[in-house]
Image (tube, rainbow, N blue to C red; front, side, top):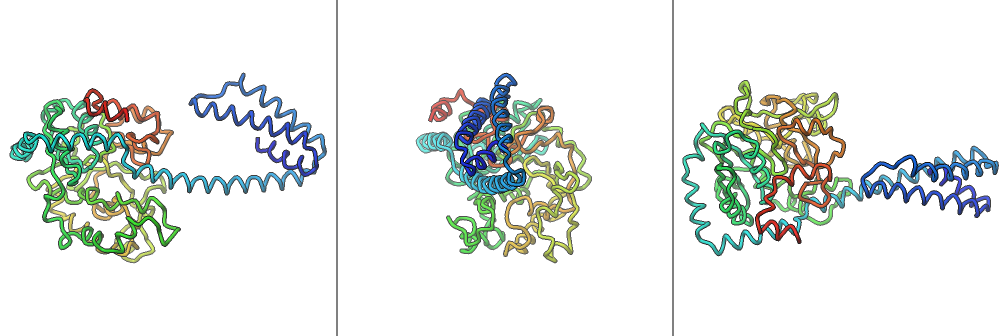
Length: 452
């Protein structure tokens, strides 16, 4: 097709409009066949392709018989390739911007579910009294049980995490979930877990506003978020610096909910071990075995993500800055947030939250790293990470279309990190069913809202 397009240009320059028209017609036939294959998600058969390619090949031979100068053809092809490359670059930038907008938006059906659950919370005082009663359960502080924490404002996504975890647990009644959300979604989140049973497990829902200790005097992040310059960087519609990537302006990267993972010992002061789960994961195996893994005095267990030179600390941090280069080895292997086991006794001993505060203070000018949770985590837990078998946590279902099916099947947890979240229309179709099978579609609120 590319060669034919070059001959279309040459034919027009030579005044051979008939040949240019015939070539263009066959190019369109090729494009139509490719488009049909892409839309239907199927491979193109040889029987379909052969007649079109044969006709196009005959026309190319015909163009060559016209004795077009070979050097002219090469120059034309080169110019055509350069033009295509520029168009591809522009399309990639535009696609990233549109994808980011879609990822940041809150789908109508999820908003519908939140509204219906909030209405029920407000009109039913029993829900509020039951929520208060559950706060006094001794199960919430029982270290003989298996504790998980999730920080999210997405009711349906949190429900899938809890449902998939208990569905694959050998003893779901021994599981306790500590969910923290924001003020807007607290009523909806509380109602959902009060009116649904998850195989006898315990679910505690708390509001981030309850944590009076999380304030500007104790947390550099809270203090930075109150500054006008920081608010402008993350929340303004435009950017004074066009070179900064769109994704780095996503407010979710500085969401207090997102940063609560650095305050787990303060949130759960009576616990010794806890598994942290992001709200865009699906659990496929029994996670209680994580609690028996020996962390060898380390604070966090995580799956490493480095492969040869990829995903090492040098990818995430600015090693031209002396504060980083003097303290950190750039070749250290990176690791993933999203499914982690924390030893809270070791955390308190290492005073890891203070380390997090130190690095947040050092990065107040965004010179050590631009933004995001992972760079802060890499620095906070530097030298305190116990590598886990990669099958515990398989990443990429929110951006990588070519993950091996065998790897997904063997994974204890699959992670939809990236913009293509499973609850969005732009989700990768071949992975979406994994998430959907844990959606409680039988609930009338979900059924009603999913139709919108």
